Length: 184
Image 1 (cartoon, rainbow, N blue to C red):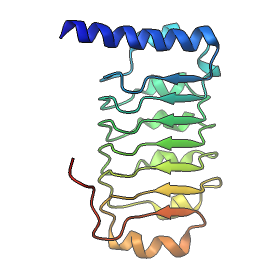
Image 2: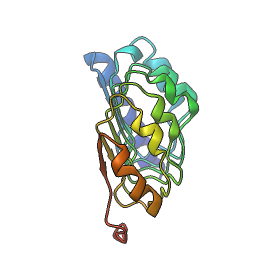
Image 3: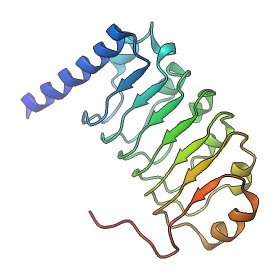
C-alpha cells in the first residue's frame, strides 16, 4: 500500500514539474487518487499560477476544494472536476472571472452551485449525473455568455422542466423525465 501511495505522490510531483518546466497553461492531475488538492503545489506553482488556464482534477476522490484553490488559480478558463465526490463549491469560485467552462459531472451535487451564475464569461456548465432537483432558471437566463448547461441524469423537478424552456436562450440538456444513471 505504501508503495502505491508513493507512486501516486511521484506521479503528482512529475505532472506538476512538467507544468512548471514547460511553461504550460495546463495542469493535469486527473486520476491521481487525490482526496484534496495538495497544499505543497501552491508553493511550487506560485510563480506560474496566473499562467494556468486549464486544470484537470477529474476522476480523483475530491470531496471539496478550498477557497485558496479558487483565489490562487483566478485566471482559469476551464476547470475539469468530473468524477469526484464534490457536493458544493466554495463561495470564492466567484473569483474565477475568466472561467469559460466547468465540468462537474459525476459528482454528488444535490443543490445547483448558484455561485456559477455570477461568472460573466462562463459558457458551458456540465452537471450531468448528479442529484440536482432544482435549478435557478432566472439566474441562468441572465448569464450573458452561457451557451450550454448539461443536466442529464439529474432528478430535475417537473417545475424546472416546464418553466426553463421558454425563459432560456441557451441549450439546456435534460434526460427524459424517468431516465436515471445506469447502475455501475
